[in-house]
Length: 114
Length: 179
Image (spheres, chains in turn purple, yellow):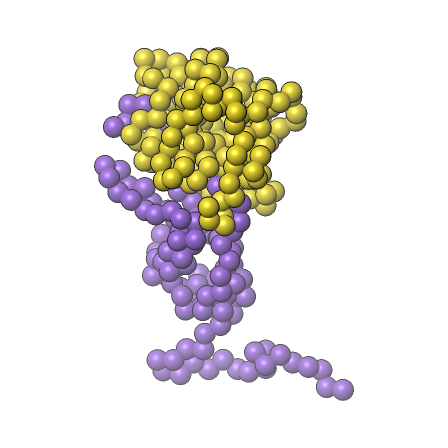
Protein backbone atom coordinates (compact mmCIF):
# COMPACT_ATOMS: atom_id res chain seq x y z
CA UNK A 1 0.00 0.00 0.00
CA UNK A 2 1.33 3.39 -0.94
CA UNK A 3 1.88 5.69 1.98
CA UNK A 4 -0.59 8.53 2.08
CA UNK A 5 0.90 11.92 1.49
CA UNK A 6 -0.93 15.02 2.43
CA UNK A 7 -1.53 17.17 -0.63
CA UNK A 8 0.22 20.20 0.81
CA UNK A 9 3.37 18.13 1.38
CA UNK A 10 3.33 16.77 -2.12
CA UNK A 11 2.59 19.91 -4.02
CA UNK A 12 5.48 22.20 -4.89
CA UNK A 13 4.82 25.80 -4.00
CA UNK A 14 5.40 27.87 -7.10
CA UNK A 15 4.19 31.41 -6.66
CA UNK A 16 3.30 33.13 -9.86
CA UNK A 17 3.81 36.80 -10.51
CA UNK A 18 1.39 38.78 -8.40
CA UNK A 19 -0.15 35.68 -6.88
CA UNK A 20 1.38 33.85 -3.95
CA UNK A 21 0.25 30.55 -2.55
CA UNK A 22 -0.87 31.49 0.94
CA UNK A 23 -0.97 29.08 3.86
CA UNK A 24 -2.79 29.64 7.09
CA UNK A 25 -1.10 30.19 10.41
CA UNK A 26 -2.92 29.37 13.64
CA UNK A 27 -2.21 32.41 15.77
CA UNK A 28 -2.55 32.56 19.55
CA UNK A 29 -2.21 35.85 21.41
CA UNK A 30 -2.07 35.97 25.21
CA UNK A 31 -2.82 39.10 27.25
CA UNK A 32 -1.89 39.07 30.93
CA UNK A 33 -5.24 40.26 32.36
CA UNK A 34 -7.33 37.94 30.18
CA UNK A 35 -8.41 34.45 31.17
CA UNK A 36 -8.69 33.27 27.58
CA UNK A 37 -6.29 33.90 24.70
CA UNK A 38 -7.15 35.13 21.23
CA UNK A 39 -7.11 32.32 18.65
CA UNK A 40 -7.47 32.90 14.94
CA UNK A 41 -6.27 31.47 11.66
CA UNK A 42 -4.57 34.00 9.40
CA UNK A 43 -3.11 33.74 5.92
CA UNK A 44 0.64 33.96 6.18
CA UNK A 45 0.51 37.08 4.04
CA UNK A 46 -1.36 38.84 6.87
CA UNK A 47 0.52 41.74 8.39
CA UNK A 48 1.38 41.92 12.07
CA UNK A 49 -0.60 45.15 12.17
CA UNK A 50 -3.75 43.22 11.31
CA UNK A 51 -3.02 40.53 13.88
CA UNK A 52 -2.44 43.18 16.53
CA UNK A 53 -5.64 45.03 15.64
CA UNK A 54 -7.77 41.87 15.69
CA UNK A 55 -6.27 40.73 18.99
CA UNK A 56 -6.83 44.13 20.56
CA UNK A 57 -10.43 44.08 19.41
CA UNK A 58 -10.91 40.67 21.02
CA UNK A 59 -9.37 41.90 24.27
CA UNK A 60 -11.37 45.14 24.17
CA UNK A 61 -8.36 47.44 24.44
CA UNK A 62 -7.20 50.34 22.33
CA UNK A 63 -4.25 52.65 21.86
CA UNK A 64 -4.79 56.17 22.96
CA UNK A 65 -2.81 59.31 23.13
CA UNK A 66 -3.34 62.19 25.45
CA UNK A 67 -0.30 63.85 26.94
CA UNK A 68 1.32 60.47 26.82
CA UNK A 69 1.04 57.60 24.41
CA UNK A 70 -0.46 54.34 25.55
CA UNK A 71 0.25 51.78 22.90
CA UNK A 72 -0.06 48.02 22.71
CA UNK A 73 2.57 45.83 21.07
CA UNK A 74 2.80 42.26 19.94
CA UNK A 75 5.68 40.38 21.46
CA UNK A 76 7.22 37.29 19.91
CA UNK A 77 9.89 35.21 21.64
CA UNK A 78 10.54 38.05 24.04
CA UNK A 79 10.99 40.66 21.34
CA UNK A 80 8.64 43.58 20.90
CA UNK A 81 7.44 43.77 17.29
CA UNK A 82 7.44 47.30 15.94
CA UNK A 83 6.94 46.88 12.18
CA UNK A 84 3.19 46.56 11.52
CA UNK A 85 3.80 46.05 7.79
CA UNK A 86 5.79 42.86 8.34
CA UNK A 87 3.83 39.74 7.40
CA UNK A 88 3.52 36.54 9.37
CA UNK A 89 5.55 34.78 6.67
CA UNK A 90 8.33 37.34 6.87
CA UNK A 91 8.47 36.95 10.65
CA UNK A 92 8.08 33.21 10.89
CA UNK A 93 9.45 31.91 7.63
CA UNK A 94 7.37 30.02 5.08
CA UNK A 95 4.74 27.43 5.94
CA UNK A 96 4.73 27.81 9.69
CA UNK A 97 1.52 26.30 11.00
CA UNK A 98 1.24 28.19 14.26
CA UNK A 99 2.59 31.14 16.15
CA UNK A 100 2.29 32.35 19.72
CA UNK A 101 2.36 36.05 20.60
CA UNK A 102 1.83 38.11 23.71
CA UNK A 103 0.03 41.44 23.73
CA UNK A 104 1.96 43.83 25.97
CA UNK A 105 1.53 47.40 27.13
CA UNK A 106 3.18 49.97 29.31
CA UNK A 107 1.76 50.63 32.75
CA UNK A 108 2.04 54.24 33.82
CA UNK A 109 0.93 55.46 37.21
CA UNK A 110 1.75 58.47 39.25
CA UNK A 111 0.39 60.54 42.07
CA UNK A 112 1.95 63.65 40.62
CA UNK A 113 1.34 62.90 36.94
CA UNK A 114 -1.48 65.08 35.64
CA UNK B 1 -18.90 40.72 30.03
CA UNK B 2 -16.82 39.54 27.09
CA UNK B 3 -15.24 36.10 26.92
CA UNK B 4 -11.66 37.01 27.89
CA UNK B 5 -12.80 38.52 31.17
CA UNK B 6 -15.06 36.33 33.31
CA UNK B 7 -16.81 38.37 35.97
CA UNK B 8 -15.08 38.70 39.34
CA UNK B 9 -17.36 39.09 42.34
CA UNK B 10 -14.85 38.65 45.13
CA UNK B 11 -11.10 38.56 45.66
CA UNK B 12 -9.48 36.21 48.14
CA UNK B 13 -6.23 37.43 49.66
CA UNK B 14 -4.00 35.65 52.14
CA UNK B 15 -3.68 37.88 55.16
CA UNK B 16 0.11 37.97 54.77
CA UNK B 17 -0.07 39.15 51.15
CA UNK B 18 -1.04 42.63 52.28
CA UNK B 19 1.97 43.27 54.57
CA UNK B 20 4.29 41.41 52.19
CA UNK B 21 3.27 43.64 49.29
CA UNK B 22 3.37 46.78 51.39
CA UNK B 23 6.83 46.03 52.74
CA UNK B 24 8.17 45.20 49.28
CA UNK B 25 6.93 48.35 47.57
CA UNK B 26 8.02 50.45 50.53
CA UNK B 27 11.55 49.08 50.33
CA UNK B 28 11.61 49.44 46.54
CA UNK B 29 10.72 53.12 46.77
CA UNK B 30 12.39 53.94 50.08
CA UNK B 31 9.84 56.68 50.63
CA UNK B 32 11.45 58.71 47.87
CA UNK B 33 10.10 57.12 44.70
CA UNK B 34 6.85 55.50 43.73
CA UNK B 35 6.92 51.77 43.25
CA UNK B 36 4.54 48.94 42.60
CA UNK B 37 3.67 45.31 42.25
CA UNK B 38 1.20 43.03 40.49
CA UNK B 39 -1.19 40.55 42.04
CA UNK B 40 -1.89 37.52 39.92
CA UNK B 41 -4.22 34.57 40.17
CA UNK B 42 -6.85 32.60 38.33
CA UNK B 43 -9.62 34.78 37.02
CA UNK B 44 -12.79 33.22 38.36
CA UNK B 45 -15.94 34.46 40.09
CA UNK B 46 -14.03 34.27 43.35
CA UNK B 47 -10.50 35.18 42.33
CA UNK B 48 -7.74 34.06 44.65
CA UNK B 49 -4.50 36.02 44.64
CA UNK B 50 -1.76 33.42 44.35
CA UNK B 51 1.27 35.44 43.25
CA UNK B 52 2.79 38.79 44.15
CA UNK B 53 5.28 40.19 41.64
CA UNK B 54 7.31 43.23 42.65
CA UNK B 55 8.35 45.26 39.61
CA UNK B 56 11.74 46.94 39.81
CA UNK B 57 15.01 47.17 37.93
CA UNK B 58 15.54 47.15 34.18
CA UNK B 59 12.42 48.44 32.45
CA UNK B 60 10.85 49.98 35.53
CA UNK B 61 11.13 53.76 35.89
CA UNK B 62 10.60 55.08 39.40
CA UNK B 63 10.46 58.74 40.38
CA UNK B 64 8.91 60.84 43.11
CA UNK B 65 5.86 61.48 40.97
CA UNK B 66 5.44 58.48 38.73
CA UNK B 67 5.97 54.80 38.19
CA UNK B 68 6.29 53.37 34.68
CA UNK B 69 6.58 49.76 33.66
CA UNK B 70 7.86 49.17 30.14
CA UNK B 71 6.13 46.66 27.84
CA UNK B 72 9.16 44.35 28.08
CA UNK B 73 8.49 43.86 31.80
CA UNK B 74 4.82 43.25 31.12
CA UNK B 75 5.97 40.66 28.58
CA UNK B 76 8.31 38.94 31.03
CA UNK B 77 5.49 38.57 33.54
CA UNK B 78 3.13 37.37 30.80
CA UNK B 79 5.55 34.65 29.66
CA UNK B 80 5.84 33.40 33.23
CA UNK B 81 2.22 33.72 34.28
CA UNK B 82 0.02 32.73 31.37
CA UNK B 83 1.35 29.17 30.90
CA UNK B 84 0.33 28.58 34.53
CA UNK B 85 -3.13 30.01 33.94
CA UNK B 86 -2.39 33.08 36.02
CA UNK B 87 -3.89 36.41 35.05
CA UNK B 88 -3.34 39.94 36.21
CA UNK B 89 -5.86 40.68 38.95
CA UNK B 90 -4.49 43.88 40.48
CA UNK B 91 -1.95 46.63 39.97
CA UNK B 92 -0.68 47.92 43.30
CA UNK B 93 1.41 51.08 43.50
CA UNK B 94 2.44 53.71 46.00
CA UNK B 95 1.90 57.40 46.34
CA UNK B 96 4.43 59.31 48.41
CA UNK B 97 3.75 61.10 51.65
CA UNK B 98 1.52 64.13 51.11
CA UNK B 99 -0.17 62.65 48.04
CA UNK B 100 -3.56 61.09 48.80
CA UNK B 101 -3.90 57.37 48.06
CA UNK B 102 -6.41 58.05 45.34
CA UNK B 103 -6.07 57.33 41.65
CA UNK B 104 -4.74 60.32 39.77
CA UNK B 105 -5.87 61.18 36.26
CA UNK B 106 -2.78 59.38 34.95
CA UNK B 107 -3.59 56.35 37.07
CA UNK B 108 -7.09 56.30 35.61
CA UNK B 109 -5.97 56.63 32.02
CA UNK B 110 -2.60 54.95 31.66
CA UNK B 111 -2.94 51.90 33.80
CA UNK B 112 -4.52 48.63 32.69
CA UNK B 113 -8.06 49.22 31.37
CA UNK B 114 -9.72 45.85 31.73
CA UNK B 115 -13.01 44.88 33.43
CA UNK B 116 -12.61 43.61 36.95
CA UNK B 117 -8.97 44.57 37.43
CA UNK B 118 -8.16 46.13 40.78
CA UNK B 119 -6.04 49.23 41.22
CA UNK B 120 -4.68 49.59 44.73
CA UNK B 121 -2.87 52.68 45.97
CA UNK B 122 -0.77 52.48 49.15
CA UNK B 123 -0.13 55.87 50.67
CA UNK B 124 2.89 57.32 52.43
CA UNK B 125 5.30 55.64 50.03
CA UNK B 126 4.13 52.23 51.16
CA UNK B 127 4.44 52.97 54.87
CA UNK B 128 0.69 53.02 55.46
CA UNK B 129 0.03 49.69 57.13
CA UNK B 130 -3.76 49.90 57.46
CA UNK B 131 -5.19 48.53 54.24
CA UNK B 132 -8.48 50.25 54.98
CA UNK B 133 -6.63 53.49 54.35
CA UNK B 134 -5.33 52.38 50.97
CA UNK B 135 -7.16 53.36 47.82
CA UNK B 136 -9.13 50.45 46.36
CA UNK B 137 -10.58 50.71 42.87
CA UNK B 138 -12.05 48.30 40.36
CA UNK B 139 -12.38 48.82 36.62
CA UNK B 140 -16.06 48.55 35.73
CA UNK B 141 -18.07 50.08 32.89
CA UNK B 142 -14.96 51.50 31.23
CA UNK B 143 -13.63 53.34 34.27
CA UNK B 144 -12.13 52.80 37.68
CA UNK B 145 -14.58 53.19 40.53
CA UNK B 146 -13.65 53.49 44.19
CA UNK B 147 -14.58 50.64 46.52
CA UNK B 148 -15.80 52.16 49.76
CA UNK B 149 -15.22 50.40 53.04
CA UNK B 150 -18.53 48.52 53.00
CA UNK B 151 -18.12 47.30 49.44
CA UNK B 152 -14.52 46.37 50.14
CA UNK B 153 -15.58 44.36 53.19
CA UNK B 154 -18.10 42.47 51.05
CA UNK B 155 -15.83 41.78 48.09
CA UNK B 156 -12.35 41.36 49.62
CA UNK B 157 -12.01 38.15 51.60
CA UNK B 158 -8.99 37.95 53.86
CA UNK B 159 -8.07 34.36 54.52
CA UNK B 160 -5.67 32.81 56.94
CA UNK B 161 -2.31 32.38 55.36
CA UNK B 162 -1.97 30.13 52.37
CA UNK B 163 1.14 29.65 50.21
CA UNK B 164 1.65 32.19 47.45
CA UNK B 165 4.38 32.91 44.94
CA UNK B 166 6.49 35.97 45.70
CA UNK B 167 8.81 37.24 42.97
CA UNK B 168 10.39 40.31 41.47
CA UNK B 169 10.37 41.05 37.77
CA UNK B 170 12.16 43.28 35.32
CA UNK B 171 12.71 43.15 31.56
CA UNK B 172 15.11 40.23 31.98
CA UNK B 173 12.68 37.94 33.77
CA UNK B 174 11.46 36.92 37.20
CA UNK B 175 13.29 35.88 40.34
CA UNK B 176 11.99 34.31 43.53
CA UNK B 177 11.86 36.50 46.62
CA UNK B 178 11.53 35.49 50.25
CA UNK B 179 8.67 37.18 52.11
